Amino acid sequence: MKLSNRSTRQGVRANLVLALGFAMAAAVSFPVAAARDGPLYEVTITNATYGQQFTPLLLVTHRSSLRLFEVGTPASPGLATLAEDGNVGPLRAVLDGEPAVNMTAAGAGLTNPGTTVTLTIRGHPLRDRLSIAAMLIPTNDAFVALNAVDLPVNGSATYTARVYDAGSEINDEKCSSIPGPNFDECGGPGGGGTPGNGEGYVHVHRGIHGVGNFFPADRTWQNPVAFIRVTRVQ
Image 1 (cartoon, one colour):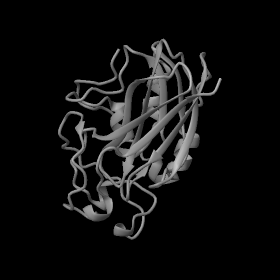
Image 2: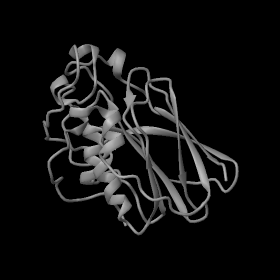
Image 3: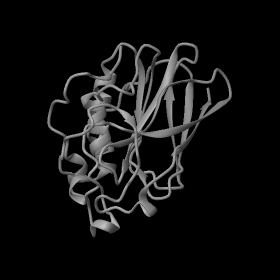
Image 4: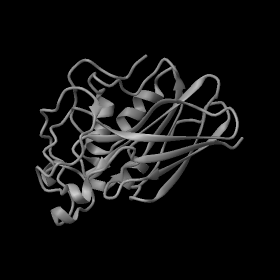
């Protein structure tokens, strides 16, 4: 099964991240999934950007038949919400209902540039794959992702992750369009409006170009943007 969707995104984007903040959204906007089976893994994610924060990270272990997205096809509604709002709840709810999914896990709060966060998840190394996604702020609909990578049978494996554009929202780079707790360029929180008119398909993100309120010298990046170490601990 693929979560990428060739239909137009439906539904109203969630504004919980604006009302309560990203940390509280991660804590209360979705249920904790019951632990599934398989060995336990520690997943350590380091934000390698200069001026972008990662919103709460979503992890999922799943069969190889599932993908969070496919480059060149429209993002699913849940992935578009994650990429635009930083809210992992809708996508996590869909994943938790999929027979191909073993387990989901989600972080809380933001991962600042140069900092590291560690989460745990279970999965079968010979059966399951690991996928990860989180929004970058301040962006319109950029997300960092791993898409169905192998779990190590023993020891550790290290991956690098790049940034993708969900293609669901135009990259106007305006404070009024981008949610977030506080941006120097905006003099406070972002607005989180819904400009729409995106490219219509997932693609490698072009970065910040200075067409709105944010300056490339402070906010853009070069891939990869994250270093991820996956370690079997049980």
